[in-house]
Image 1: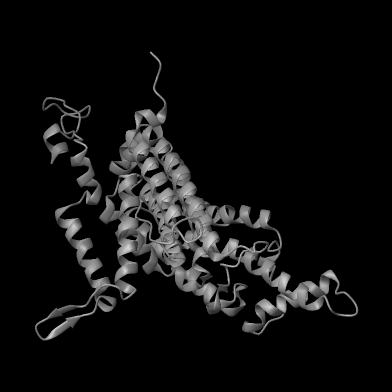
Image 2 (image 1 turned 120 degrees about the vertical axis):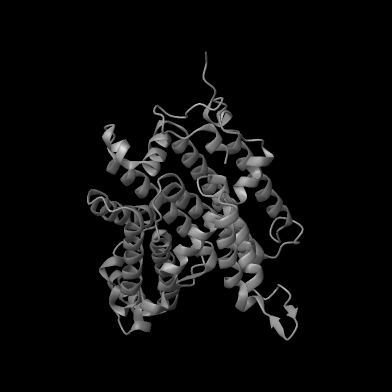
Length: 411
């Protein structure tokens, strides 16, 4: 019997891809660049950034929902991806401006003089005129695109190898990932880090070579790129968790000792998934920050990774589409509440301003979901789709008498 293709065996993937295609087409047709103009350019950028955050949430769900590692450092990889592409964006744009200003000199500048002028322009704000070693490949788009995945991937590989071989698990591993993120952020805050300290990288929305293209068009292009990346990596993640590999990583989440006893290389599986998730998150960051226009070390602070975990929990941990929906819903609500568009709530003797109270509402929502709806928003879709555990007529769902039973699986 011929086996059905992967996508046909996973109808939820088809639903996600179709919804993503419809959403992207609708925004394009309503945009100022290619449609009626009903959606302003600023909102198109918000939607494009939201898709990038949804991609980061999918990667987070791979690590937390399927592998069982609550990583509080995912946004470090997100920001590193942004820094890597930001180097080229800032260097190439500054080089164009400096070259144009020096073009009228009686003697054309040499390549060395041009590089020194670019370095002075970029790093003069932190009292330096030298190009740091970490900017050695900033002139090359190809090299920086490689570094977008190579640098976060290498960091995740080294960190994961040290942590997993030491068999650090649970809350201790979460604390280590948080400590890694905080240490990286504090280093980047220093002016001599080579990344302009607290000033960060700015002007990233101006794409070198596309100066004649309007921001309205660029915002739609980045929306397309973000949607394509989300679709591609969603399919990759769904394929990864649907086969034998997915069964192994879920088993590691549920009972790591038993999986190790059965002879599987637990540390190897954890390292591969952790590193892959870091690289996916970095790609999301590389698409996010050109739409945001600026990146600074505050983006790496642990609170950002905690927010990401909250989104995944609200959406539904262990459901890729749940993580994606959670990130989209909460991030859009956050933009609405913190942007001052939500009307104030007038209570007797007090006025609730959502700009100040949104984080409280988000925290309360997280607590309520954890207590009363552990499957999150995805649980609602499961019920609508009529999802049920396999019918085993009350028998054990595993090889021994202590295994999960059908009644428990339905609970």
